[in-house]
Image (cartoon, rainbow, N blue to C red; front, side, top):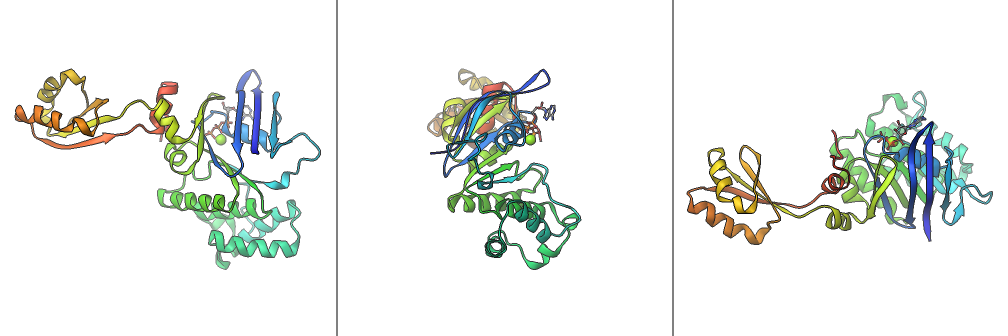
Length: 309
Ligand SMILES: Nc1ncnc2c1ncn2[C@@H]1O[C@H](COP(=O)(O)OP(=O)(O)OP(=O)(O)O)[C@@H](O)[C@H]1O
Ligand SMILES: [Mg+2]
């Protein structure tokens, strides 16, 4: 069963086509990532899936039920928007209560869910009593996550859940998201961090200018579109020019004042390269193998880098 199925979704803003026949299938139980740069159409797609925006054509099913059907129950989806929708002048707890009210969560159920979430998200009394306006970025995200989980959804959709968080807190969030997924909750998230897509997601779709360019596991994508491995050779800068001449048959590229990159070479080639250089009196400071990343995948698919930050 698919948790989400979008079929040929098309969306225009005025004359601009911002979603161009987007079809994707999110399996129940997976962490699915939409990876793409600013303006790719990620939020638009998510808002359409949630029924917050209209589409010009196409179809969307959530757990097999069309979102336009009367039988479709929105309560099974939890949503963490990109700009979180918390009320700044309310406390964390009042925000969670407010969203519980929207979803029609009964008070006995609310108490039970809140206790589970307190433990799961590390929400202590002090944080719950604090006004949102006085919280840090990471604290706000945890409260936002709590508001999206209070109705006990089967599917959680998160729009750039870790943008702007510092790297340690980002990792904590990845851990939380994985734990949530271990409880059987399907997750669709958007990101422009290739590392996040790579480490966190079971499958990823690369989206650019409203088009899905490729879908697969991070491993599959890197294998198919990432290009080959490279060997990086480090040495003192005074050796670089001579080394480049000696290594000419491998088409070396000087990538910094003290390193050369050769595409297509691997660990196996290190002894040969080393002996050629040492034969000419060049001492190598280090070898590194650079494996393709999702950024390479993005470059190969679009001709530009993904991450601008
Ligand atoms: N309400 C709107 N009216 C007109 N154009 C819009 C509207 N919302 C978004 N757009 C445009 O649609 C395109 C897709 O925007 P969207 O917000 O979906 O991208 P995104 O992938 O979520 O980007 P980001 O990573 O910056 O959040 C962009 O070109 C944007 O300028
Ligand atoms: Mg967005």
